[in-house]
Length: 161
Image (cartoon, rainbow, N blue to C red; front, side):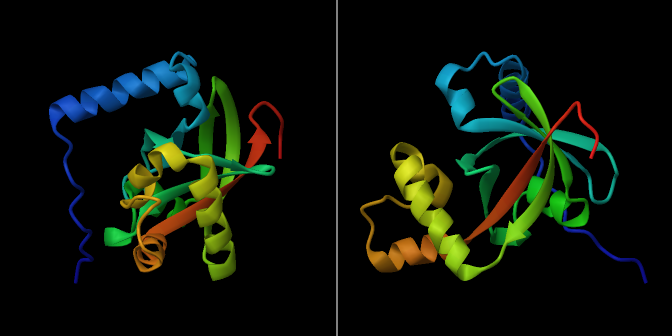
């Protein structure tokens, strides 16, 4: 019996072009202050083994970087790829880093990161969590519960482990 894999959503051609353009600009640190919130992540495909580069939002947390994705369907492709192969390359403001990814599952830590997002990403919080900062406590809790958090430990790209 063959295992079935959920069908990947196909991006419309214009969205795919825009994403490739964003990757191009981010890699050259040409998006100004957006480079402080969006990075390029390169993961290895969990089925194909191919490399995929995607622009995603991020947040610095001490000596690591955190990203969040919607938990529907098990998360974005980058998230699901990292569950199989936790090694990634992150490009942040024109700098490359090797990174090891770890899902954040501890509820207390998830709540702390949620509060950090509320503080550090207040102007676009709704983009990350699908609700406004002014939402009821119940809606905010629901938004936090519906997201998956991934922490990245950064290593300089040009140095060995």
